[in-house]
Every structure is written in structure tokens, then in C-alpha cells.
Image (cartoon, rainbow, N blue to C red; front, side, top):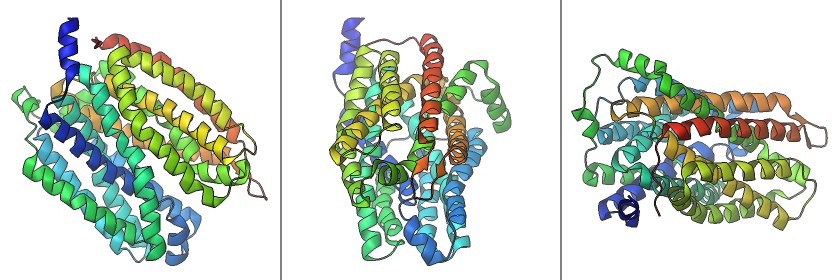
Amino acid sequence: MASQASAVRASFSRYQIFVIALLAFLQFTIILDFMIISPLGAMMMPTLHIAPRQFGLAVSSYAFSAALSGLMSAGFADRFDRKRLLLFFYAGFLLGTLLCALAHSYPMLLVARIVTGLFGGVIGSIVLAIATDLFPLEMRGRVMGFIQTAFAASQILGLPTGLYLANHWDWHAPFFAIIAVALPVGLVIAAFMQPVTAHLALKQERSPLMHLAHTVSEPRYRLAFALTMLLPTGGYMLMPFGTAYIVNNVGLAMTSLPTIYLVTGLFTVFVGPVVGKLSDSFGKFQTFCFGSILSVIMVGVWTNIGHVSLTTAIIINVILYIAIFSRMIPSQALISAIPEPTRRGAFNAINASLQQMAGGVSAAIAGLVIVQNANGTLSHFNWLGYIVMTIILITVSLMYFIHKAVPERIAH
């Protein structure tokens, strides 16, 4: 058994490396499109003559349309070649991004973000289904680790470059740049990626609606769905107010933010693959527990600090992101092992939908908790920290039962 595990862990084939790189680069374009709109708000609001409430609706419209799309596509997600499904939604994502680049009024921007969410919000679940189809559980931690570097790359390369282009032209420029990067990725997928059709050889339910209903009502999936809704709440509660907290409460200048993003992103580029290897070597649940304990500590520290130096803020931020990645990567790998191949696409689509809805609710709750004082500082930010810490501890107990339901073979 140990020799078999070692053989599995030894190396990826050249095609597998190509697929991992392709999926990671594709995720980079999706994450960047999702993240870039928030820092562009300072330019968009005066240009389009909209209030913060309207801009907030434009941002959240992506999440809610993505949630709706996830539910609508779940019944069909396992009835097609996953490569063709990926290309279809990626083409729609490019269309939505083009509409954003061409938007010169608020209604057009709102429509553009809805279209982008309808297509782009489903792609993450398709990527996860492809990775699960092509890689065994023993390799999946490393695969998820490499794919998650897309998040770090969007911080290091995407956001600074997008803001640079916006400052030198206008806020439309980053969306044109995303299209210029994303279109070749789609062409490479169409030309060189092999079809992903193994699930089609297995028996399928005739009705897409029944397929969706049976996936939603499957008792084995309920725990995973609940866990999926809780896992992203910390990020959605803390991140929207992160920059205001750093500037107004921690006391750092706005000009310090690119440095914090850059250094944190550089560290997480290396952390993702390392965490993936550790989760395959020492166990995904054990790695998740380590990340959760570290997260509780660092969230408590981050949400209760006063004025600190830039170096201290960077160190805290880096450790916090190490903790986040140490939870994100093993949890995705474990949850991916829950559904059988014929329901994998539907399961992941529903998961993505629930995640988007939970994110919207979490952000709304955070907005109700946080109070901005007359001097700009935020009150009750530490309350959010206590809520997030409690949710993290709950997810550990839920993940224990997921771990027990997934027979994991650890590679040595």
C-alpha cells in the first residue's frame, strides 16, 4: 500500500501538468474579474454618477446571479462533456467582461455584472469537477494547491496591473486587459485539452430536474453543503472592510496597501503548493485542523490590533493567509471526494451557488455589525472577529464527519 501511494505521489504526467497550469490560469482570469471591480469603485462612482449603495448593488449582483446560475445549471452539469461545458460558460464570461468594458452607464454596468456572474460564477465548479475527474484523491491536495495560486497571482499581478491601467486610461481598461489575457486561454482549451467524458459512460437520470432534486436531497451531501456555506463566511465578513480597517484603525496610509497585497501575494504563491503537498502527505483533515487553529489565533490578533507598523501588519497578514490556505486547500480536496462521478457536476454547481449566497448574506451581516465613526474608524470590527472565530470552530467539527466519510490514503 505504501509503495502504491508513493508511486501515485511521485510525479504528474506532462498532460496533467498542462491541465493544472491551464485550470490555474483560467481561475486567475475569473478571480481577477471578480476582485477588480471593488478597487475601481472610487473611479466608477463619480464617472457613472452613482451612490455607494448603487455601486454595492453592482458588486453584489455578480454573487447573486452566480448563485442563481449555479442552481439552474446543476441539473445539466453531468450530462455534457465537461470541456464543452467549460468552453460554453467561459465564452459567456468573456461576453460579460466585454460588456463591462463597454459600459458607459449604470444600467449597462449592472447588466454586464449580472451576465458575468451568470457565466463566470459557474466556472469554478466546473474546474473542480474536472480536477476531481482527472486526479485521484491522493494527488488532489497538490492539484488544489496549485490551482489556488490563481488567487495569489491575482493579488500580485492582477490588481496592481489593473489599477495601473485604470489610472493611466480609465476604469474600462482593466476589463479590456482581462479579455486580452482570457481569450487565448479559451482558444488553448478548445485546441489542446482532451474531452472529459468518463462520467457520461455511467448511468444518468433522464430528467435534469430530477437529477437536481436528487442531488439536493441526497442525505450524504447535506453536511458538505452546510460546510460549504460556512467556510467562506470569514472572508466575506472581513475582506470588504479590510482596506478601511487598515487605513482608519491600524493607521497605515493608502499608499501602503499595494505593498501589503504584493508581499502577501508573493508568500501565498509558494504557500499553496506547499500546503497541497502537506495535505497529501500528512492528511487533509490534520492540515485543515492546523489551519483552523492558526486562523482562530490570527483572526483574534488581526481584529483587535491598534496602530502598528507596516512590517507588523504585513507579517500578521501573511500568517493569516497561510492559515486561510491551510483550510481552503484540504477542505476542497476532501469535499470533492463526497459525490459519485455521475453527480459531481451537479454537486459542485450547487456548492458554488450556496457559497455565493452565503457570501452575500455574510457581507450583509457584516455591514449591519460594523459602524463607521465620524473620524472614519470602524467600531465593532472585533465583533466580526469573534463571529468568524466561532464559525471556524464549528467547521472543524463538521469537517471531522466529512473526514470520516472519506477513506483517505495518505502518501508517504
